[in-house]
Amino acid sequence: MAEHATDLLEVDGISLSFSGVKALDGVTFSVREGEVFAVIGPNGAGKSSLFNCISGVYRPQAGSVRFGGDELIGLKPHRVARKGIARTFQNVEVFPAMTVQENLLLARDGFMKAGPLSCMVRIGRSAREEREAVVAVQRYAEMLRIDHLLSAPVGSLPHGTQKRIELARALAMEPRLILLDEPVAGMNHDETSEMGEAIRTVNREVGVAILLVEHDMTMVMGISDRVCALDFGQRIALGTPAEVARDALVVNAYLGGAL
Image (cartoon, rainbow, N blue to C red; front, side, top):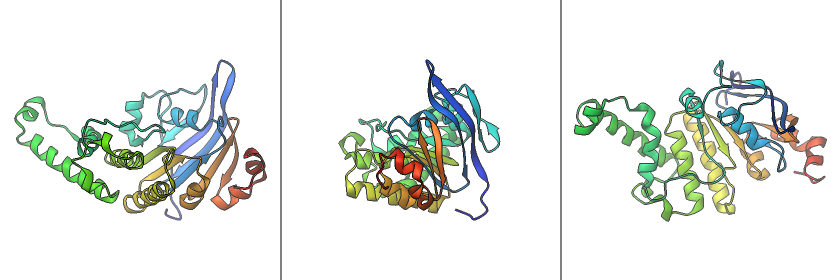
C-alpha cells in the first residue's frame, strides 16, 4: 500500500436495525487505495451486516457509504458492482456444472459491448471481445494458480480451490475494491495458507484494495495493513494488526483471550 494512499471507501456513521435490534451502531472507517483492510469481531458483531450495507443488499437507517466519492446507499447490488466493487461470499457461490473458465468468464459480462447480431455470428467486435475475455481470465487464473484447472467442472474441485476460483472471478471484474466474506471459512491449514498468499498476491500485483471479514486471526494479522474490530454493532478498535491485538476492548470481546 502506498504511504500516502487516498481513501477509496468511506463508511460514515452506519446504523442498521432489525425490529428494534441494532446490528450496526454508528460504524465509521475508511479503506485506502491498495490497502488490505480487515473487519473482525465475535459472532453477531455485525460484520456480515456491514458487508451487506456496502454491497447494497441492506439499506441502513442512518449513515453514508461513499466509494470514490460517490454515495452507494440506495443503489442496488448490481449498480454497486458496476461502480467497481466485487464480492465473494462465506458460502461458496459457484456454478458447479460449469468449468472453471466458464465461471470466470461470467465476470467479464460488463466488458462485452457487442450487439446481438455480432454475438450470434461471432465476428467483428464480438469475436474480439471474446478473445480479450479469454486472455484476461487466463491471466487471473495463472495469478491464483488455477490455470491448469480451467477445463475442469468446478463441482469436482476441493472446497479450498473453489474459494480461490471465487476470488479469481471477482478479480476478473477488474474492480477497485474486493469484499471477501470469510475467505478461509471451512479450510484446512494448508488451504488457509494458500488463500492468504493468494490475497496478498492479488493485492500486490494488481493493486486492488481488499476489505475482508474473517475469524482466522492468524491469517488476518498476517496479511492486513489495518484492522477494524466490531462488537455488538459498534467499532471498538481501529489500527494496525499489532495495535488492535493489544487493545483491551478487543481482548475482552474475545472472552478475555489474547489474539
